[in-house]
Structures are given as C-alpha cells and as structure tokens.
Image (cartoon, rainbow over all chains, first blue to last red; front, side):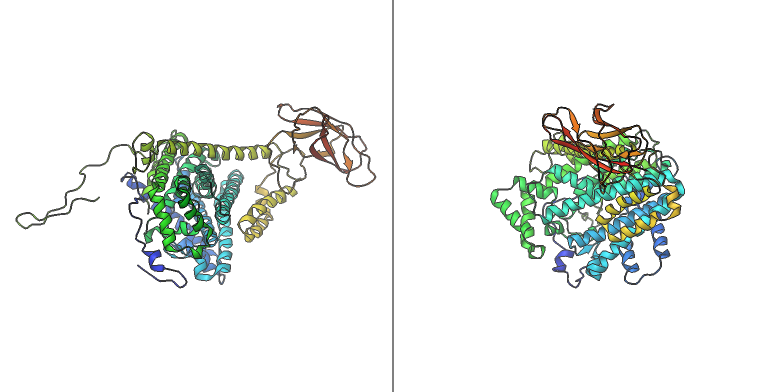
Length: 370
Length: 241
C-alpha cells in the first residue's frame, strides 16, 4: 500500500523502494524451527494481554494516553517478551509474573523507540508515521517519558510478589541496562552528529552491545532468569549469549534497511539518510578510495534534509561494490555462531525444554525475520 | 520454496512445478559467517575468514570488558565502598543515583523514582546494602582505575572516611601528610597518621589516630609522595559528636 503522509518526503519511494540489486538480506536457508515463530507468537500474545490490561487500567489523560498506547499497539515481533518468557520457563515452571514483566519490557522498548525516532528524526515506525510526525515533537517526547515511567511501574508490579531479593536484582539489572542503553545511544548520536569517522568494527560492537544488546536481549533474559529462578540464578550467565545474539540481530537489522519491504517497518536506506555508523559504513570507509571516502564524508557532512536519494543510493552502491554488505552479513553470521556456542555454555545443563529450544532457535531466526 | 515453473504436458494438462527438494533439511545449521571462517567463501567480494574471525574476537573482548566493569562496580557496592549514607538516608542516596540515570532518559523518570522511593512499602523491601559505618556519598562514585587509599581509625568509633583512588607518583617513594585540618575554625588538626600496604597488597591504608576529645566536624588533608611532594590523594574525615 502506498500512502502519502503529510510532511513525508518522497513517500512513494519510502514505501516502495526498488530494493538493492544483488543484495540478499536473508543468508540462511529455512532452518529456524517452526516452533520459534509459534512460541514467539504465543509469548507475545500473553505479554500483549498484560500490556493491554495495564493500558486500559490507566486513567485517561488528554494528549497523552492515546499516544502512550500507540506504539505498543502497532504490530511487532515481541522478541523481547519472548526472551523474558522463555528464560523464565527454563527451570521447569514459568511464574505468572513473567508475562507482566515481559509486558513491561515491551513497554520500555516502545518508550525508547519514541525517543529514538525523535533523535533520528525518523519518519516511519512499523509502517506508520512516527509519533512526532503525527503529534509534533513536544507531545511525542512527553509520551516517551510517560511510557518509560509506566514500564517501570509495571515491572515493579510484576516482581514485587516474588520478594525483595528478586525486586532488588531486577531493579539493579534495569538500572544497569538503562545506563548501558543511554551510553550506547550517546555513542551512536555523538558519532553521527560529531561527524566521527575512522571507527572500527570493535567500536561498532561496543556501541551495539550498549545500545541494542543490553536492552533488547540481555535485560529481558536476565529478568526472565530472575523471575524463573526466584532470584537464585546469576544474571551474568546470559550476558555473552545475549550480546552475540543482540549484535547479530542489530547487524541484520542494519542490513534489512537495504531492503524495501513495508513489512520491515523502517524507511528504506533510512540509516544512510540518518548518517548512522553501521558496520557497512565502517567497512566502506576502510576499503574505499580517497575520492570515494570524500564522497561519503561529503554526504555525512550534509544535514539530513539535504541528502538526496541519488547521493544516498550512490553510497549504497559503493557499499555493495566494496563488499561492505557481504562483510556485515558474514560478521553477523559469525556472531550468531558465537551466540549458539554461548547458548550451549549458558543453558546446556538445563532440561531440554521448549523454552530452551526457543532461545537456541532465535539465533537463526534473527536472519529470517522480516 | 521456489521451484521450476509448471508446464503443460503434451496432452495439455497442467503439471505441478518440480520442487527443488523433496526431503527435509537435516544438516546442522552453519551460519554463513562461520562457514566463511571455515574456508567457504560467501559473496565472492573478499576472503572474509580473518576479518570475520577478528570480529568475533573483538566481540569477546568487548563483552568481557563490559562485564568486568560491571563486576567491579558490584564489588565496590558489596564491599561498602559505594559511599552510601546512613539509613534512612541510604535510600535517598540510592534514589539520587537512580535519578541521575533517569535524567539521561527523561525528566518524568526523575519524578517517578522520587515517588517510588518515598513509598513506605518499597522502603521496607529495599534493605540497607551493607552493615559497615556509612560514609557521605559524593555526587558520583569514583571509578577506580588504580590503587585505593582507605582509612582505619584508631582510638575512636566516631570517625568515618571514604576510600579514594590514588594517583600513583611517577617514582613512588613513601607517603606523607601534613595532617587533616578542620573545614570549620577552631578545631585542632588530626596529625597522627601512618600508612601501610593493604591486606590484599593492592592499596594503601591510612592509620589515623583520632584523639579522644577531637571535636566533631569535617577534616581534610592531602597525602603526598615523600620524595617528589606530588599529591597522590585527598582525604576527608568526618568526626561525629
């Protein structure tokens, strides 16, 4: 469907870009166990039910309630909820509080998305206009704040029945995640706004660990682990698996940005428009000629509004020509392999359950999702 | 699953397209990057084996360092070096730190955390994090990158001081101090201070002898390298009434 939204430039291209010739975003064959999709759907439904219950229970606040409820009600994979629920079930019994905690995680995630979209001046989120496009920046920012606040309240509601030991560890994990996420976002924004060049793959991985892996994978796993074990399991157990899975997820997300698919939910080549320092951009800078590097630098030096589609497509073409996309795909695959290895280390001694299989199945799943 | 396009038989009947495979895929999943690292090329643009292996090594270094920093912070808290104030102020100090983090995310979080920590129900849930004599909390906990200077008081249980990181002199000799002087006026300084290596060998302990009738108040002083006169740490001592 090609819908022109007011204020959205080149909406036709944004909705139906031609894709990127020669690029295959899904490198793996069909190897994700079919139960992964089903399990995510089931866990997602449980978390959504809790989320909906919570949103309906809030008093109606003008110019706020509808905005807070917007993003959570847009379709999403609910991967973070699935991670929490699966981790909570690893020990044989999933406490009912897991669904509420999973809902809190998704709500927190949506609060950060609102802020992300403002910081990136994004135009679309999950196929629809971003909150600031619909309601203006001030109201969107306020809604993002409120969404984060609601998420913490919901999380406390979830873990308090489990006792002070779980509450303390859950809050400690949440504080750690908050700090890491803010630091990671600061790195990404600082690089972008400061015109930083000369980054390495290691720099990117550190940023992705902080910005993406902690919030999207490690934290949900840790909360699930704490809930499922009654606070007895060591949250650090899941950190390496969470990092490698999260890093593979993010790189694949960056690669998917080169695919024009409204179902993907983000603007085609949006990352290049935003000047995000992806693994592909870093690789291109390292392998491009001096003239090509200047072309990239010139693009990144422009304000976003001045970056034309032709300029962005030219840089994307350079990425393909220099093998930057193939490099990123290969790194993502290797990190996924490391994730599979760490999964075995972290969970290998636990019972062979559907939840453990789900966590293992998420590794190939990150490459096959749309 | 794509297959060959269906075709019509000589009799004109449409035929199903021939599937590319007729059985399940049973081989173990091999990420393409891992396959590349094992010598199978992908995409044909470059030999990605070493670059990919280095990416994985970088990944392990990155997460290792991140976890180490987290453990160091947790150890400081567990050892009582997180500078928590006396209960019931302890929660407000923890709240201050939460608030600082919250500021990075939103101002509304600021209000939420304050409200949550004022909740008597939650205060009962969050127990004091250590049993040692609490110390005054700084605006930010120091990040220990080298040896720490901690304090042991002799002759009194009225005194408190926080451990501080030390700047190591270029050519360390012994440590000296001119004593700890009152921030207010009229009180005598605390001058009987000696230094020794900490039990774990990784820091210094200042043994401070506090006179029995030392007036309450704050006292501060600089610890210097004896040979170069270079300051290595600043200490503040609090004497309670």
